[in-house]
Image 1 (cartoon, rainbow, N blue to C red):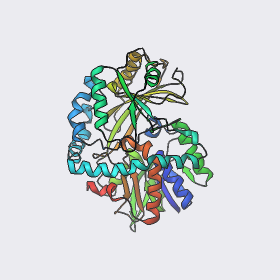
Image 2: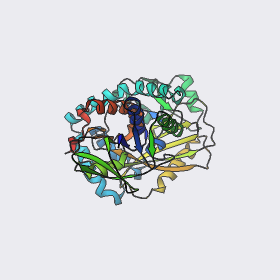
Image 3: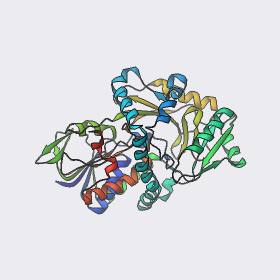
Image 4: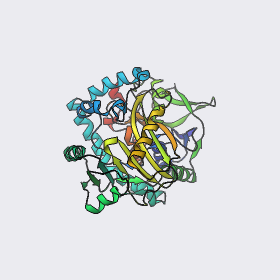
Amino acid sequence: MSRVIIVGGGIVGLSVALELQKRRGDVTVLDPESPRKGASYGNAGHIAIEQVEPLASWGLIRSAWRRWFARGGALSFPAAGVAAWLPFGLRLMAAAAPARFAHGKAALSALMGEAMPAWRRLVQSLGAPDLICEDGHYVVWESEASAKAGLAAWRETDTGSARFHVLTPDERAAVSALTPRPLHGGIRFENTGQVADNARLLAQMEAAFLTAGGQVVRQKAVGLSLRDGHAQVESDDGLMRAAESVIICAGARSKPLMEGIGHAVPLIAERGYHIQSARHGWPAGMPPVVFEDRSMIVTGFESGLRAASFVELNRPDAPPDARKWQRLRQHVSELGLPMDSEVAEWMGIRPTLPDYLPAIGRSDKAQNLYYAFGHQHLGLTLGPLTGEIVAAMVESGTGPQAFDIKRFA
């Protein structure tokens, strides 16, 4: 019997695994993907310490109609997924109540304030400080009206420890050189971060975990069972795996596992899309650029140039919507961005709970069961910090109350 089994090997699962292997040893990660192609791989690589306000807010709800996919925006509610997004939306509206929003913001802000220091500790422990760059990111607008409204909105938004300023002439010239389309304004965040390459990050994290004595089993967890008050993990090879501590970090796949033993997990598959080209003319060292009028972020990685967007609330097993990849191609073409026309397409799932806070805690259904999932758009940002929190939680036996899954009971 292992001391620790971790279900899921994305950024959160590997962060937990590295911390617990260092502190306790004898850790096994159960994950079928190699190489990993989930949300930990497919995101925009942005360490978003500025996003301290939960997206479950009345401001977002009031502006949602302007963001609909049918109106050219990034928000999508496919008709076939109504059984998933309708109850989720009702819970989101309840979570947006002023008191709950304020409580959630306080809890999320506390995490975000520690996110970048946790990232520095992680990359130093990997011996790869070049994996992150703390050079900020740009937000730009393509019309005078959107520039005025966008700047006013950011000035009214709490960005925590993140700082920004209106573009200097040199910065405006650098961003304007990316596109022949006129830009009418922009800001630069000064101290947000970017991962140099998501695929290299995940590979180096796994390699460090294995070097430290950890084990990765390429099997999928298909269920949890309870025996004498302890959780066991059933994998798709037919084995029942027991451990002193079981930790669920399986993203959207956490929902059926946790619900199978009686937890309420109103998690939805919030699906995102990207296109990426290995051949491009993106300047070396250029931070990510958010084209806010198009709800699109463009990031230069070691492996290529990526354009990412969309918030599609849907069933996890629904087929991809090819119109979204076409929309990204259209945006890139209209902007004249230096991306080759031959692109790889990706679609993946952000595991999202209605209050847009993660679930991190200890189960009350089994003495040895812990969990960390539901990080929505902030899985990359909060992954290393979550690893430290969960490792401390396993040692102490108590977790952060604000993120306990029992809040949905």
